[in-house]
Length: 194
Image (cartoon, rainbow, N blue to C red):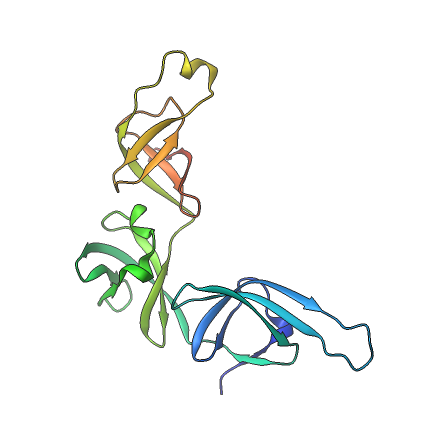
């Protein structure tokens, strides 16, 4: 028997199933009535993990949801082609393919062999979870304007090995490795030298 989650217990980042689709809660708001006999309502802002659609819906506090059959499996990025992006499941060693809709902008942050977490729903790949930060090589950096580096202010454009262009501080040079925040696509510092 599947575990049931009551609407009132669904918090941010909770995963639940509605209409045979997996959802992630982005925000929840509980409204308690002042009149006797009124029902407590829970307004959920949620993302459909299959379509990435985000919407809000109100439920009764006692409404119950199944826990989705979701798994996070470690996988490494292999390559992309006309069929989609291919990953190697690190547990079963099978190749899993995700189409463009499931990938979103993840290719901006993925290099060959990069390890990520792959979401599987009912055994099928539906999306991926990037690490908070990735380290990428700078393949091109604009020359710093004279006087920029001493004041420490200002940024310049840099192109990374995945083709992603970001703003970096003037002291970053071509060939360096930088840390990029995957949520915002912004520069997050120099990569640790290993």
